[in-house]
Length: 215
Image (cartoon, rainbow, N blue to C red):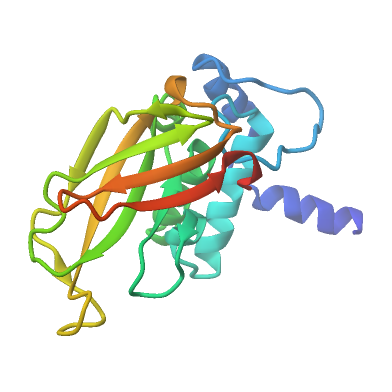
């Protein structure tokens, strides 16, 4: 890359490192020196300045390509429209999602926006489940299992009224979401984890996700 090209590339960066360093240090996030390589693991409770920078840049670049913010969700489970699946949002993926949303509207996240995500104490997990009754997802619950240890969520919400599935009117007729938030302090962000959703009807759905391999 020529000097001119390098200068142009630097000028295109919308997130000044000094601004980010001040922001992440104010919330106790690690600031690495120089140009240390960015970790490949996304479930980082204390991301470095460089990791935050990359996450924001990726969101801005996605918006320039007209890519949807959802591309940064960490997905698991089935890839078809009739079997249980889900996604989780880490701090870094949350920054990319936010940056994409805002860039598509022609604006940039403020310091407050960035700090809100970095200061977040919980990780969101959303799972889509299927059933044959309109209210089948009521009172659903979700837990993590890590090596025999059960981690309960801080909050759980569910669709009281399900929507029609792609199979309607055949089985499974309905689709619903169960969304839970887990405190980062309660689980190991690098452990192999089983995510299980328990609908009231007892037909549970489980997914094995190796948190250490998320990137």
